[in-house]
Amino acid sequence: MDVRSLFAAQKYAATRTATAAGPAQPDIGRAVSDVASSFEQTLRQAEVTAQKAMIGDADPHALVHALAQSELAVEAAVTVRNKVVEAYQEILRMPV
Image 1 (cartoon, rainbow, N blue to C red):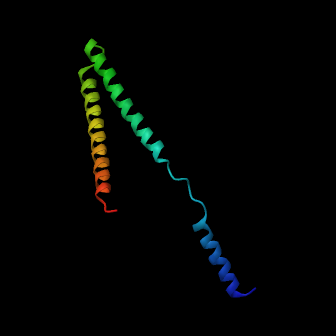
Image 2 (image 1 turned 180 degrees about the vertical axis):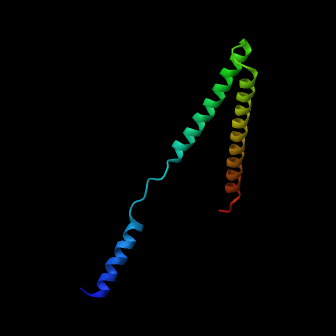
Image 3 (image 1 turned 135 degrees about the horizontal axis):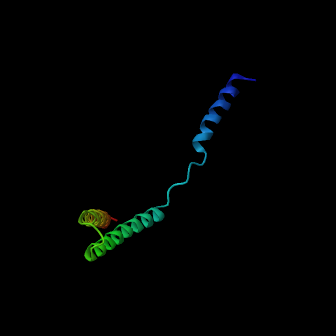
């Protein structure tokens, strides 16, 4: 066996893994759907806790915690929305 062919076989084996199919890329639609359902679940839990606090079944600490979580979730959603709008406006400003 020729040394050059041995080196060629080694190089081929090394580059073959680089061209092999990698792990599947995450689906952006599924990720957005998961985030939206998590957001909805957070708001629903806060609403249930607030209703329980109104009738006296939940302590005030649980109510404050639930309201803080829902406030944080809403602020995060608004921030993401603003970034998406900024990106869209930036795309519109691009010359054609």
